[in-house]
Length: 181
Length: 354
Image 1 (tube, rainbow over the protein chains, first blue to last red):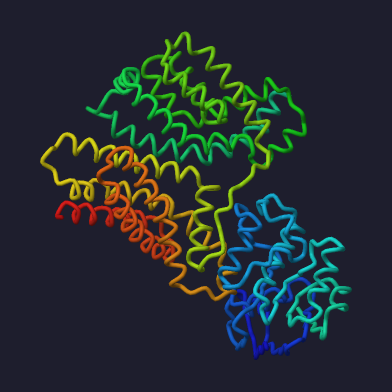
Image 2 (cartoon, rainbow over the protein chains, first blue to last red):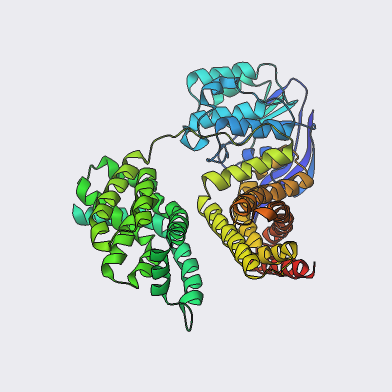
């Protein structure tokens, strides 16, 4: 499903990722743990094509559901508009009932709390049932109920997840990978 | 408390108003320098013309309110104002200071009125303050401007109206208003274009208002030109007269579209959105307001040329959109402005040759 080979990334003089290789098989949920600045988010951004690697090769399926650590949804959009935009770009139906976002649809994203934004961002990532989910700190700002909903939603998914939440990692992971700084 | 409140308001509301008002004042100042400078038209003559013509008076007041409102309204919801609200300052003092800050956004309008005296300037400032801060204030101020009473009679109603309007704006600034959805499920280019237009309408209203004024001025010039020259070929005249206004209008709304695309880059990359869709989205986003404004202005001012104006707006906006993307990649705004001038000149020459 996902094959990463000999990935290296430099930020200036600092090497963030060094010759990293990793596979994620269908139905597997690989959770990446590691201290701050060890390159977890960079790895996920490279997998999604947001950032280019300096060396190495990444093979991914055609469609990916990506939820960044900080939901970068423009404040001027309604939650419904964001989900419709993502659905349009993915050419898929919008997921407007995922994670209880139906109650947020008519509200501007700028007026949502961080946790509500994260729910909208995750619902957008789930749009179109992509074969691979790439989730960066998906439970950071979520309340307990939403966290449980995400855990349930991931039970049969294929996913690469970065998190600091050890309990969440233990509950969803098929395999845990620890990145060293 | 009064000095502390003044400092807090200047640092929050004042700064937010200034960020939008300074470019507006510079732009209007440049136009005024050309119009009124040297052997140009005296400012007092323009004010006299406004007193004599109801249409000119209303058109100029509405145009000014549209231009200044986005800057004036920032006084009420700027970052930091929530803290000021929580401190429960004296209402009278607060509203008085807010009126002064909103007045800063009206400097060009006040300067125009000041050419006929101090009291007219103060009255003009108060009416503009009322019109740019709340809808009820705008309606009543417009009625006063349309009636054009003596300045001595208008001053006190204008003062009360400005105070009411500022109070109304402060009390309702944080209300969550219902927002009409603009972005719908559609092909990728169309959905993206709707997202860019949503930003223009909800965030970059000042640019959209300026584009509207430029297009209406262009259509007005076209109507006057055709009325004064009976032998002119209407289509050729429209193409040459409208080239600059339509180019400027499209250029004004290019930045919000490209900024939104930059903000969406992670999503666009992760969904592998094609470059052709991005280019098409920019063209659609710039052509939508340009053609809508051209059609509206044309229906009002030169109805026989509505179809020509609308189609021309789409063509000009497409050229500006393609150039804007190119200039954005090079990250040089001077190149963009120069390119827009070249596009407008080329269309003017081509239009005259038709």
